[in-house]
Image: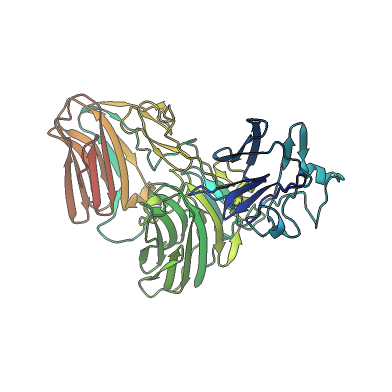
Amino acid sequence: MHSVHHATRKGHGTDYLNLALRDGGVSLTMGLSNGKQEMHIKPSRVRFDDHQWHKVTVHRRIQEISSITSFCRLVAVVDDVYTDHSHIAGKFTMLSSSRVYVGGAVNPRALLGARVHNNFVGCLRKVEFSADTLRLNLIDLARTGSKLIQVAGRVDYTCPSGDPQDPVTFTTRESYLQSLELGALSHTTDQALHTAQGTQLHSATAVDSGFRHTVDPTSRHCAGQCSSSSSSSNSIIIVVGGGGRGLLPPWDASKQGILSFKFRTNEPNGLIILNTMTRVPKSNFFAVELLNGHIYIHMDLGTGAVKVRASRRRVDDGVWHELSVRRSGREGKVGVDGQWNDFRTPGDATQMQLDSPMYIGGIGPPYAEIFIPPAIWTATLRQGFVGCLRDLTLSGKPVDIAHIARQQDSGAIKPSCHVIANQCGGQVSPCQNGGQCTEGWNRPLCDCSATLFTGPTCGRESATLAFNGSQHMAIWIGGNQGSRTQTEELVIRFKTSRPAGLLLLTSAESSSSDRLEIGLVAGRVRANVRLGDREKNLLAGQGVLNDNNWHTVRFSRRASNLRLQVDGTQPVR
């Protein structure tokens, strides 16, 4: 893809400056008298042929060292971030320009200094040429019919507003795109789903009581979970049919279907696609999630779920990857970057009946009434995808998700994909009050769990509760049906002088004996988990924790895998 040609001729010799786009990078060559300079700006994880606007600036300065020798310095800057320069000494003074080519030529191979041989395809704007007192805006001159400009071919002085290949960036875990099929205009609050016995936790209430202590209930582990911008929900609602603003089509894949897209992120966890069934028994679903740096797909046709790891290596490396899913009946295959894995759904069902909205990038705020299959861990934890998405295709039809984002005017979904590196490396950390900063996708991830503050940057003081031993707090979750989960993340901060007491307990009002209990026993933290007929205890914490100092408890579960950590000590599994 060729960018900009600028060739010049001087006197009896031949001088030139040639600017082009080559192999996704910016190429610059210059010949001045007998000296030649060349550079190629191509960052390792950034390409400039990404259908986004980029700014290129070229500076040339000549300094006379003596009456017969001059020093020429050439500098190129892309997007005010990526820079390269070169210099040369020789017998030259000025560059006299007689002709400038923009966008190519009749024979681009013949242009001096050419490193590419095809003309530019795309949009240009603000092509400005400055030399001493001369200032020319070449595109404005062409548009106004200046006699200085000769235009070859038909040129449109506008840039198309959208293309199905335009990427979008989901900037927060709460941002998402949603489609509604015709007639599917309601959600259900029923959270029941039958999955593998012994890996789900049934709970209806959570109780915190038992002894005199102080608990910080809002302190949370923000690394990989919290947004670095507003905590409010950002959503795009696309209603298909009924005269609504519907642009995102449903995925009709009852018997067979093809789905593909490209994605790019450096964050290891995030829900990318979720499509379920709202009618009882709610057993059909399809999902794509990024989990621990790998891409997984989930599919259930009503007679059993299959979970397939599609990637053979981690894909949270900040570069573009492509996912493709193809299915026909029970048979399917999924590929990442051209490496394919076959899969087969269990049971005898061959049709996938999906009548819920298709959610892309996430499912919105924490308390939205959305049916979530317990096997989709990132959905349960409300970990939306943060990164770039492009080239979405449903059953062979490209979907212009950038146009959808523009139509809905969501501040959390940007119609571009730029990289802003080094979020945590400044002199002043973006995480306040001692919060720990890690690099996210164009955002800092602040871990506030070891502080008395909360919020995206640990800037808001946490609410604090004081218990005297006769008080407790009960929370009903999941409505009348309770909840069934395969994964949980808990962070609790406490301080007390008592050696024993209950911190948190979940229980189910049904006949289920499932429970999760976290408490202080003999000055140490104990986690007791019962799933069906299996029970496990974890004990963590060095020394005596009832020292009236603040301590942080972190507990996580992934199916039958448990993890308990107190302060910065080694986790217990």
